[in-house]
Image 1 (cartoon, protein in one colour):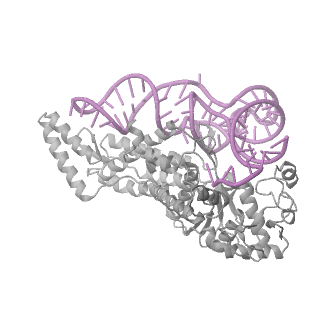
Image 2: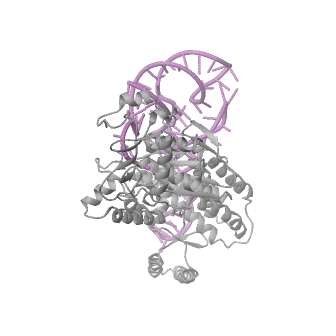
Image 3: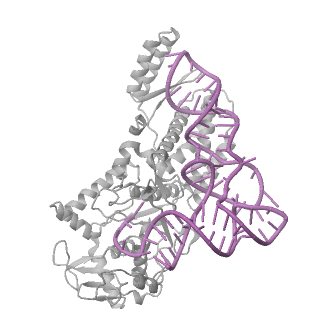
Length: 464
RNA sequence: GGUGAUGUGGCAGAGCGGUUAUGCGUGAGCCUGCAAAGCUUAUCUAAAGGGGUUCGACUCCCCUCGUCACCUCCA
């Protein structure tokens, strides 16, 4: 598999020995997560699913930044403790994540539980003179790391001349960034240099090295983290280990809202919860992988709607296959399946091109639906197609609604009843039964000679 | 200003030096008692502009113009 590496700006072969280790920068838990977070998480979850579905073990670590000025300020505003606030938002994070059908990461380390690891790292950096103590805290000495700027392709001279306001006189250089900030107020921790709390960047260095080792396969996050966060992580980590840090830097593009950047000041932030409420998890997942992961996606009603229509096609396809009962053989689809599977995998193997992968997927779905429309889906065909379809659904993290055996029995009974009434031309009564079936969340599809049913995901936005 | 990316049909969005991307939309139709869903078919004769390389460029090179992101916390 090849992945575009931000550092070298090239597609790089994903090499690994026993497993693929991924560190994904998570969220700062001071508010609800938004659709932009969702995209990044979905991209990496889908990547992980793809690898695992192909029997490649994955260790995915995603952190929570639970100590930060934003958390502290927000907590103060709300008259709550910082830890209370972050705990609350970690909980809502997991609720969102579960609804989005995100597989749980191997571990979700929290910054506050790794203070000791960070202090150890900082101590070593101070010893190596890559860091120094000033009156406000401990700072990383950027001048000591000659490769600074290699990820974001920035030159330190440019950065210095471009650096804005608020020059901290206690720093040797405006580029130096905080590893440890002194503070007498809670939350704070003891350190060899005095009470305080860690800087943002150091936590990811400490936790990624702790859980994944000095150099691991993929470090991921949103594009906006390239500078300064990931640049600084590289500086800290490589100064600490004297080795190459992550082998591949993989960055997900931003989501804009109707062409505008999502921001608090514009007031156009869409929370995951809000979007899920209207569109449900499958549509959101389809939407988030509809374009290449590295490019921006614009959030519009039309795009969501388009993905809803595509979801309906998937549902139809699934139920046509599930309920196939014909025994005679009418079509040979083995080559279609082979080709679909191969092209699907090839697309994802080439820089995780989900857009292309989806087109292969929908090609297959359309072909099946087309056969189904001609009532040409036999049991045998269904048995061949279902594993391929289910493989793709699993990779894409899509979940078609299913029904219990009891419900199935009820449904078939009701359909039989309706059929009899229809034969007798008692359409009003037949429609009543259809309504009754609909109340179970089941839609009917009348083919020429048989009535198919399916459970469609209820999507609020569809009704408007 | 610096850095990076990008500019494809009404919209979304891929690949590729020479073959229909795909999907949505739109038009017509099929199926049905009706509906919904689905399907069929047609449709727009896409490549920011200007040079160049080539037998041939949307695809490679150069220039111009435009858009976006980052350069401060940010997924």
